[in-house]
Image 1 (cartoon, rainbow, N blue to C red):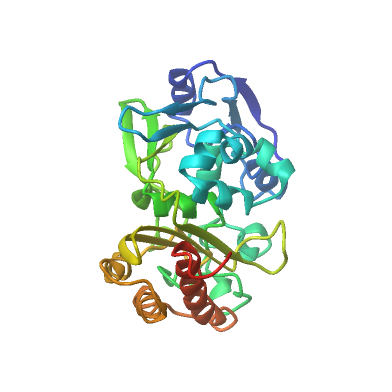
Image 2 (image 1 turned 45 degrees about the horizontal axis):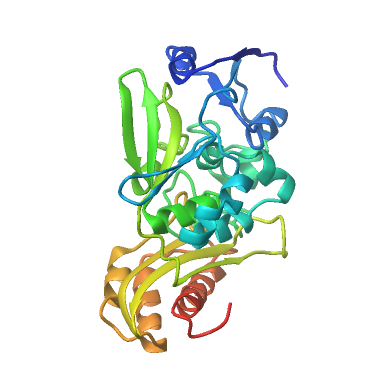
Length: 330
């Protein structure tokens, strides 16, 4: 691990000031991903800024009925909060499907948004990786790619985003509140994470001098009809091969609205609005679910070892809709 300086700040403006003009500086809260990356020399920041004293660990009810989750609120405190469990059980279930109790007790909501891929080649500094060192190559395309992406890939990178939390946020259409030198702005979750394109080293659209302050959940939480399914290699403490966050609003057996977000398949939570639109006004049933799954899977591409994900994702979508519409028990 390389030497670095350590600074603690007391407010958001102080954190932004430490970031401004210092692109190699990193903020540290729970540190559950950053410290691992530093130990492996994947990331080598020369300055760390401790933001744990900032007043960003609270949950606030919003006037229109939603919630604002503080960026420094831990994943555990979020998942077990009474208002999250009653209004957004999809989010609570997704959080509890991830990591381990010890990690959830440390990891923060803002940090979860910022966590980096678990691609084998990204973590192995002895191999090329365009995400770690642009222009060096992507050995995953022809190499070990069982856990890799089937959507939104490029010839530069096929890594996936590892979060369960973010998949549920995508289905809920959350909004990310950030603070920077020019003040505050809000980023829809669909626009926060990036596809690799020609710049795989850029994971998201957050500016290098901006701080995440909160995550806004809209009023619609799909508290009655929801499902989070995570398929992984072992029962606990494993990242998703494929996951699906499903929220449905129903009137009797008719689907009024549906949201489906997939995890483990792209460098960001993956949605297809045409698939969701195909469910509206339909009576819940296998044929309808299969049609939506087929639409959602359009454009999926396997790279050999991960081609099984295409059929697996289709089945996960159908099962998620079955559970959300209460046609089968979770």
